[in-house]
Image (tube, rainbow, N blue to C red; front, side):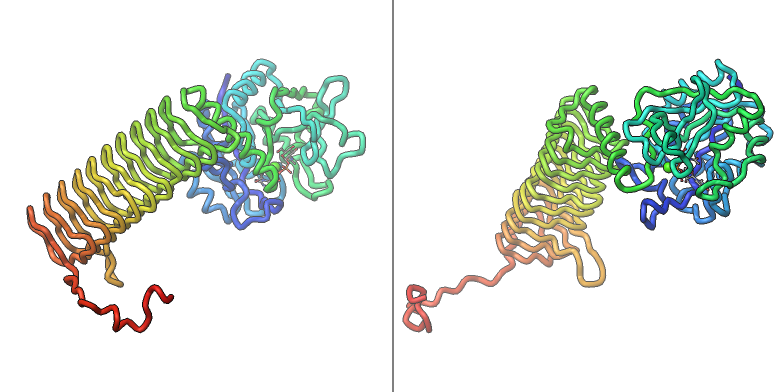
Length: 459
Ligand code: UD1
Ligand code: CA
């Protein structure tokens, strides 16, 4: 097939998006659009992958790292001008070059492979990837004369008749590399947008009596170009369906796929059930047989097998086998929840480990702490971890009992098998088998009723 190079165009301003973020960095299901493009391109057998960025493209470099080479296009003078900037890198290559845009996040490597294969079989100078759009507004139109492609005309330059054409330019092409760079020196910016259009290379090819092919792909949705927020929402919906289908085919039950939002890199085991209105984000991994009940939002976390999450929020944390949480609880970064741990409602855990079989049933804050196994944490326990300046850590040993409404003022060490009386404010260490009571003793004033200014029964 000869050498294949890939060029990704990502220098455009993206003004139609009306955003401070580079257009190609807008996320679709948790991944920047240009990263989606690169991820599919990486599955091809490339000699070079070059990404064209603007002078302000540092954040694109940060996103893609060293998976691609970069070329800076100082001024955004059009897609043709953008490709020409890579002449120093690619100009000498005798093979073919695949050109794509960073704003078409839905292309699959399968389609790209078919296109390259088609191009190499026909041995033409250019193969354009086209598709048929119900509404072609905004796309370049493929103008044919008896079946032969003769040019691409942009929306803004098209005649009324050309505007009716439904076959569109997807912005993906394979070029004979030598032909491409020769032709790019011949294009001008004599058009409605005063830009150097890459698409004008087609006319040059025809004028040189060379043949241009078009490969019509089956599914227009895959070719969606994202220029504004409306298309961004559409692309997200299509990607969301694709992701959900993949998981269902792998044995995950998704109760309401239209309202289940799973980022592209999330992994889920078999027989796990995901209810409606759940968000699974980032690098989250969920094991087998888990139940994620509606309204839960889980990001960058690992849930092992048989874990149940009820309407809760989990960030950068881990839950081991058979643990459960919720409703309405929150694991903030670095919470590590052991096996068979029960976390009930209105509990917040941050930077803390909780050992196997420990129970934290209700209304509790645990921050900067190490809790052992088989502990009972009563209702309303607060780990007081902050002195106004620094955070401090507390430790609680196995089989301890923290009575309801107690405050554990860090740093403090509560040994195994110890007992904290309800309502205590613990500031000192507690030893093995001790009972700690740290509250004022109750005083009963006899016959005080008559001295009360108001009787409760009068109120
Ligand atoms: C382009 C095509 C159009 C096609 C559509 C498919 C041209 C002239 N038009 O239109 O035929 O139907 O894509 O989605 O090519 N870019 C640069 N430097 C520039 C200008 C653009 O790197 O100077 C990059 C952009 O970042 C973007 C890509 O090129 O990723 C395409 O540019 P865009 O302005 O989005 O072109 P469209 O109007 O969508
Ligand atoms: Ca575009």
